[in-house]
Image (tube, rainbow, N blue to C red; front, side):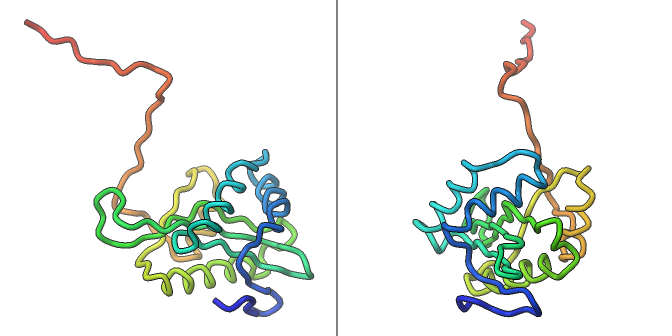
Length: 163
């Protein structure tokens, strides 16, 4: 992707270290708390390993209005395909429904194609209806695998062997 691409009134460009505070502010307006460490770590890794990350921002009226973070995975979980995982996406509340999200996803898909990625995956809380709607209009569908989790605070329950 060139340094800046124009999509209507949205300027699409790679994220920079100077965008960190704005990214944190936009994200925390959606999440409810700042995830500074997460974004600091992502930006640092992307600078160190540019082939493994795509981080894009949309600028409107000289201010960052939205962003997307994706990481590229090659061979994880036994897969032979190169995939990307969408780690974070957010659009400033005042700029929603103005093409910012569409510009982000279009630019992300183009960058991923250029890097040889075949598919994009993400996860969402099933009660986050606005994010699920965004994923739906962005072309996402249910994946053929299930995400499982367990607490590591509780000891594993081991079956009792009968003699």
